Length: 271
Ligand code: ADP
Image 1 (cartoon, rainbow, N blue to C red):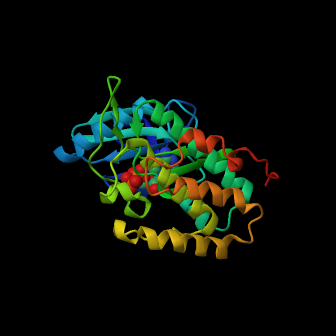
Image 2: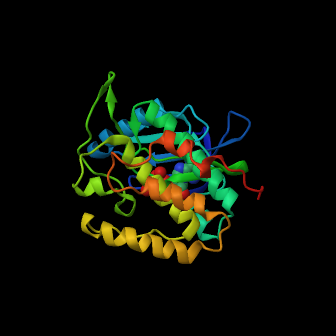
Image 3: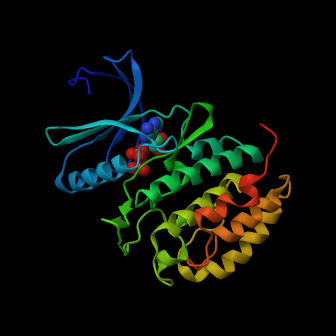
């Protein structure tokens, strides 16, 4: 980074699967802060990184998706300059204390808005989880990390995705092979687990296989009732969760269903 002379490294923000992420100051543009993803070169990583950049560039024009400012190769290494989200990840926010119901609603609505945009661009994110949801000033949620994403619509045609990738705790049953695989419902399921996580501060289950889903659906209701009875108006959330965590992807709520749900529309007091 120093050799580049364009950026002044400030601190390491995190470590990803393929490389590190740094907070830097861009010297030329009024000391503008941005995040740089540094991916050291090797052939496998390069192919993966080029794909990730190309997909991310297709869908970064929305306020709920992290923007890519630029990207470049330096010898075999790749630098991706991104918008800096200065309030950390949703995961760290949840770890630091319970969220108020209106904040849960606000983050969920923004996640759904970002997903709508991504899906309209023909892309399925495939790794929606609190560690990949970044927060910037004023609690604006930004979907990040397109490393597991793929295009499900190529030249107007639907392409079936057959490979299950991402994080198993956030996987829907179809990733374990029981149901026919459809692209968008995967992200919707994961968004449901994120919603549950925001309220209960834990995932409803550690899915090891598809077999545990029936038992877990029962457990979901038990733990959810126990843990969030204290949350006012949780009926709307429960209804949304019931529809979003539907095991059959064809029966699962669509983005439009979620947008028209009571939980999406009701007005909670400002936090
Ligand atoms: P992974 O590949 O493991 O999903 P990433 O490489 O996307 O992870 O990012 C690793 C960590 O760096 C994230 O968990 C987050 O804490 C931080 N990070 C990534 N991108 C940004 C950004 N644009 N702004 C602020 N922090 C970021």
